[in-house]
Image (cartoon, rainbow over all chains, first blue to last red; front, side, top):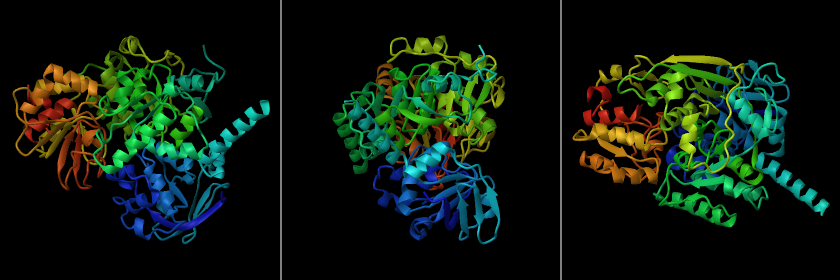
Length: 175
Length: 427
C-alpha cells in the first residue's frame, strides 16, 4: 500500500447516502464495470464519465450513510478511486471501503479546504491531508494498525485467504 | 461486580466481551467477535465470489446461517433472478439448509425475529443495514457488506471496534393514536442521523419496558437511521415469552452493570407527545404530524410495509382504521406484509379483504416500495406517505419524489384523506 497518495479531487456535500451513490434500481447489477456507469448518478452525475483512475473524493459529514450496499465502494473501486476523505463516514460504508482495499480517511474539516479540481496529498503514516493548490492542510488520527494491515494485504479477501492458507499449513504439519 | 477497568460495562460491551472471549472490553478497542448468527439476503449473492477467492470451501457453521431473499420476491428482473439462482446454487454447494425461498419468504429481519434465529446475548450480523432491528432481542445485531459476510461464512468471526454507548431513557405513556414509530421519529429528531454514529444505542426506561416485541423491533430498526452500529433493548420477560417456542439456540441474557459508562444519556418523555412525521429528505427532519397535516400536503401514494412497520399488529391497526373507508381518489395505496406468515394471518383475519375493498393493493410479502428498486416506484414530484424508514432523495424512485415517514395508522389516515393526515382525526 502507498503511504503517500496524491490525486485530483472531486468534492461532495454532507450526508451523501448510498442511494445517491448507487440508486436502488441498480442493485441487481454485480459486474463492477457495469456498476461504475451509474456511480453518483444522483449526487455528482458527471463523475461516472469524467473521473480518472487515481482521483480522490472529498466529502462532508456522514458520507455513505444508509444501506449496507457494497455496490457503492465496488463502483468506486472499478473507477479506480484512490481514496475517500470525509469529515466523517457512516460505519458500514467505512467498513466496506476498507474491506475492498480503498483507503477511507476520516479528517475533520477536510471538506472546507477543497474544491473540485484541486490536488490532494494524503500522508497516511503521519495523518495529514494537504491541498497542494492552496497549501491548506488538516490532520487526522492515523488508521488503527488492524485496518492498515487490511489495506496492506489488499483488502479482506487477501487477508482471509492468507489466514485460511496458514490454517491448512498448520493442519498439514500436525498430520 | 465492577470489572478491572474501574467501572461497569454497558450491555453492548458485555455482549462483545462474551463474543470475543474477553473479561472486559473498552470503547475503541478492536476485537475479533465470534458470530452467533449470520443472515444474507440478495446482497449475499455478492459474497459468493469473494468466498471462493478467499479459498474457502466450507461454511463455519451452516446451522448459524440464514438466507432470506426479500428485495425482489418473486424475481421482478432478470438481474434479480440471477441473484436468487446464485444464492440457491451456493446454498446447495456448501450445504446451507436454512434458506427462506419464494413461498416461505419474508423480509429477512422479520424472518430472523419470528423464527427465533436471534436470541439474547447473540452477536448477529446481516448483509442489510437494518439488521439493527434484532437488537430488540437483547442482542448485538449489526449490518455488514457482502465481502465481509464472505469472511464471516469462512471464519465465523469478524473484527469489530467496540463502540461507545448512548443511553436513551424513555418515560411516559403514549396518548391515543401515538405509537412506537412516533417515539423513534421523535428520538431521531433529537439524536439526528449522525448523533449515534459508530455508537451502540441502549434503550431503557419505563416506556421501553412496557413495549411489546413488535414495538421494540420498530424502534431498534430505525436506530440505523441514527448512524448507530446497533440499538439494544435489555432482554426481559417480554423477550423470553416471545422466544419461548421459537429460539433456535440457547440465550445468554445480559444486562448492563449499574455503574456502566455511557457517552451520553438522552431523556425522552412521551407524555402529551403528538404523532410525528419525518419530512423529505431525511429521517431526522421530524415535525409534529398535526403541524404538517395543517399544510395539506397532497400524496400520490401511501405505503404500509417494510421491516419497520408491517407486522400483524401494524396491519390489524391499519385495517381497523380502513374498515368501511375508501382510499382517496388519485392515491395508490400499497400494503405489503413483512412475511408470508403475516400474509397468511391477514388472510385468515379478513385483513386482506378490508384493504382490497377499500381500493388498496395488498401485495405479496417483500421489501416492496421501500427501496425504489422493485415496485411502487415514484415519479418526479410525487409524494408518498410511508411506514418505512428512509426518505432520502431517490429512495423510492425519482430523485425529486418526496417521502413522508410516519406510523401505520397515519399512513392509513393519509391514504383515506389523500394528504398527510393525523390518524386521530379519523376516530
